[in-house]
Length: 502
Image (tube, rainbow, N blue to C red; front, side, top):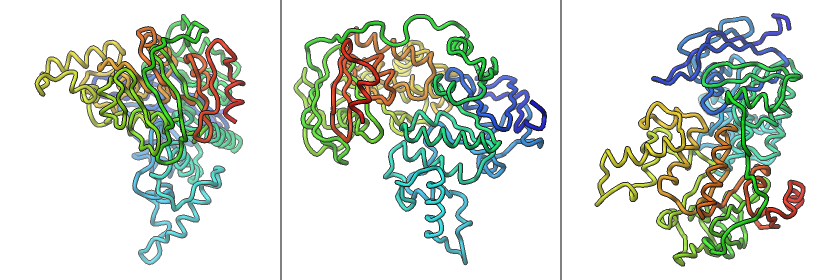
């Protein structure tokens, strides 16, 4: 490929956070008309190099050129003005304002006349921005807080695409989207390629990367390992490049048997949530069972998980912890009954990003680590260090702020909150969202171990393969109701599930 086709070039990029080296002398060249995949384990440097290119943060060392000119944007806004737009991995919208205000945040002057902002003009432009990416069911005047995580992510997409970027960076965005949302993003990526622009596509989903990317850059521990062309894509080779070793053993459960004890742990009866997203739900969760819940976007499964933990308002029905015959109406009751909840919305609901690893883990276990209302530094450190070691949390130390961790290490901290408490019943909502194959494999092994110990797991997921790979039973939701149930060892495949979803 000739020099004229180069759109962006990065040389010798280095980024450190205290003692942690996030990027070490990384080179990368991005060409026009290319969808470049970025892949690697959590903490490999994918999001770091993306954020440096976009202007979110600055490198400690190295140089970049964009369209032949020196490139070092001070902010993401400046980067977007230059033609580099990034859809971030976690939530990138601002609460308390409208959809239109989010799309044009920082650009209000474009709709100002005589010192007044025209809401009508801004709403009209926002509606156009949404329609440009194929979204017609979200009103620009709606407050962003009325939207769920998936729709909020589409607002971010509309904001970036309205600026007609020449490089689009998609950082783990598809993990937060329904199939409809993913299709929108895939179509936009193809349009960028066809227009002679470029896409940097960060994903942990090998199948997704191999299908949609023209080339693939593999990072590991802050180093560039290799860049592969489409003809060189081979799943096992990519996995080995990512982890530095061959992946051995089974990925999901090795058995094909529906097995659990007769003892019922949770009983859900006639449950209807306050927003009307679930209606008249009934099921039982047994000791030693992994019970899955799957469905399409807005089917109500995420709200159901919150309701079972007592975190979602209900109109009718009840959730009973059967061994103690106690009704669960709030999270504190659930926690006192040795229940834990891993939220899909990790950064907003499961973690305090500005707090340390230690404070996040201890925050869910004051009653376990305190004595007569007091916590000693020694007991606190022991409580947390056991989880850092057991979960192999990659960090400088337990006092490091969670916001500086990779997605997979953040998820390990979330799990650690409940493992440290020795939770006997776990509600896992999209437990492997945004984490790499190595961490996923470790999470699945952990779930198998918990099942073998007799713990009960309610697993909610948008990924059919992991539901089929891990669950004893799988309940399929549609329009807020349970539409069918499948058992491991019987007719248990994607076609059978999809038939009940649609």
